[in-house]
Image (cartoon, rainbow, N blue to C red):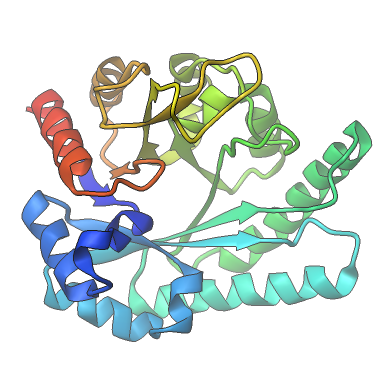
Length: 272
């Protein structure tokens, strides 16, 4: 397995906005690759970001786009499809192997809205998959935590994957907690499509940032130090021959590198 670091973890206060310092830390901490958001490309071109990462011994493995393509507005839909396709072209040109598209919407109020969003996701991602075919970029989506979205539970995610046959899946271990879905059950149900793993853990914390109805307040935890069965999950990934990325994601973003370092130590211990 390849250790990767989630984009936002490189914006900790201690780096003072210095991308070079953040990348030096990532390399020293044992990360081979990193994931970025396309919104970061407003300040630096994808080519220059790839070159900067390479100069510090790290490769960009994934570009993530949060996209509002699931809409009834045809102009917005077409605009978003154009942007996603352009990202596929840019990723292929730079040798970046993966693009993750996370569908977004601000209109979902009813079950009917939710089903409409689901059907638009299926339509849009099938179009994206047809465009991406043969260009060397793996397109994936992930299970998302919002309860008004139609891809947060195991059953919802399975439905979308079954209706977009070419699309792959980023397994976010922590997001299922928001939707009362068991992370190990989710892994077993969805593992046939997993090409990437965002490894995330939670801890009960009354002062925590997150609050889900019916659950104690909680906050981000170092991997292996929280309430999710991260050790068992890594054991299953190993047993199943998973060779992709384990992307360390701490939410909310850790204020120091301590939680990231503890996460790396735990993961390396399980992989040894």
